Length: 137
Image (cartoon, rainbow, N blue to C red; front, side):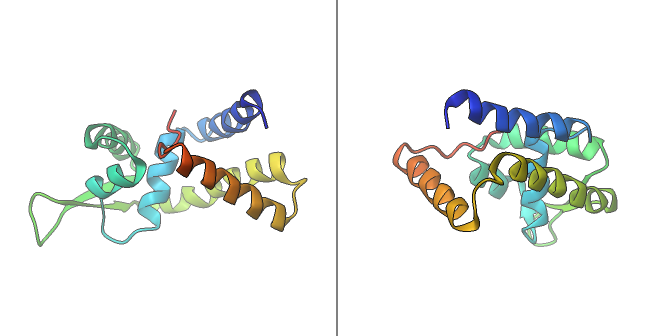
């Protein structure tokens, strides 16, 4: 798959998310919070290979949209625990359907074994070339 085709996959996904007023970066953050109990911005920054400042900006946007809450930890007042709002929990199935639909549109020609092979090959290349950045445009 050439670079233009890869860009087409991510651009289509970004456009579909934008219809829900969510960016790719916000989707990644929402998904991160949804899959981790006691999520914090510092752990999110490390796993997304972003600065804490960049993650803070994403969280500010999500908070202004009413999708994320930050609550000060009872164990450490310097730490804020992130959680999804009721609105975000309602929106996530739609966003996951968009992600799944985008994958199906571009990769449905591959059977499960081929998809697993593609995923493994891409992970191998990313590891070899030290590509850790998550696309967040």
